Length: 150
Image (cartoon, rainbow, N blue to C red; front, side, top):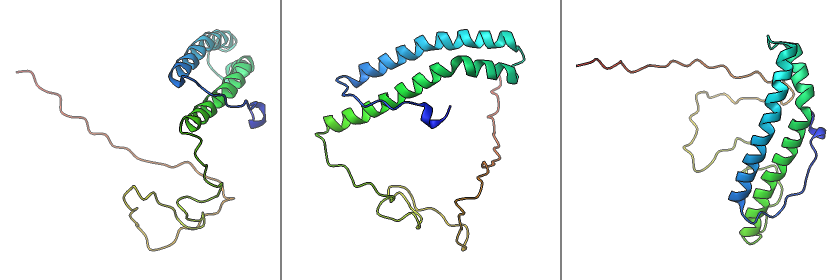
């Protein structure tokens, strides 16, 4: 699915956002039965869940995914639009590429959070055209001792 495949729909005024959200949940539940049916059909072609499964499943559920993405975008826009209307249509800030008045060339910081701790005196240089590698992390979990019976 490409960005251009998702069709933009205009936001609408939600008289009852809570009721609307439950309606969206019901719509998703109904769509889940179709997705499960298509999953079963794709598994019949490839029970090992290999590439043939994903190709068949993707082809069979593409229309559902496109419809739900379009509806989800409209639903979110409608929530924002309705909140703006309910707030009395306050003036919107000017569109800028800044956060808190700082240009993007400078580091930004949320004033409500503690100041970041610098671990180096060097300045990090960012190359916006360089490929991005996923972060790596190591996690160690400690489980509490199991209680002994009296």
